[in-house]
Length: 79
Image 1: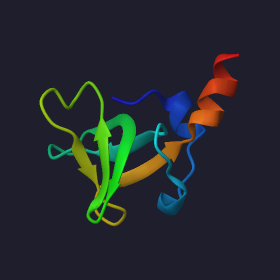
Image 2: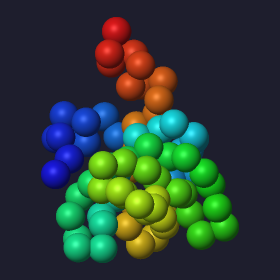
Image 3: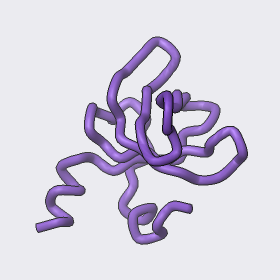
Image 4: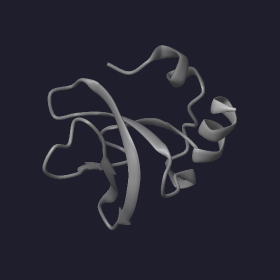
């Protein structure tokens, strides 16, 4: 489950995702999860996180994307 305080900070524009951003999405079981954007592909973003033990999840804009937080926002939040 995703921390609700993080969900409040999320950006909802898929086109704005950059490598290193924290991406929120629904997994194949319908749970809200998050992971770090690693690679942009033709099919969407490859996202790695605790949920992806052996392989990344693919996040698609119209299928499972819920929002993201830029790495700049995350670093500002930690300061």
